[in-house]
Image (cartoon, rainbow, N blue to C red):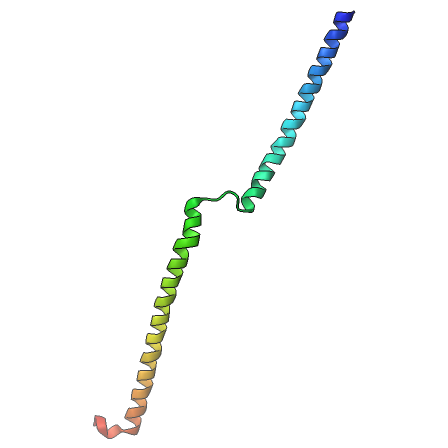
Length: 98
C-alpha cells in the first residue's frame, strides 16, 4: 500500500513537472521572439555593414552629389544670364554684329 502511494506520488510529481515544462516551453516560445523583435526594433541588434553605410558612406555620397548639383545649377544660371545679356546687347547694338 505504501509502495502504491509512493508510486502515485511520484507519478503525480512527474505529471506536474511535465505540465510545468510544457507550460514553460509554450510561454517561452511566444516570449523569446517577442523580446528579440522588440530589442531589434529598438536598435540593440544591427548589421555592422548596414550601419557603416548609413552613417558614413551615404552622408558622404549625398554631400558630394549636392555639391555637384549646386555647381551644375550655378553653371546653368550663368549660361542663361549670358544668353540673356548677349541678346539684350545685340538688340541695343545691332550695328556691332553687321
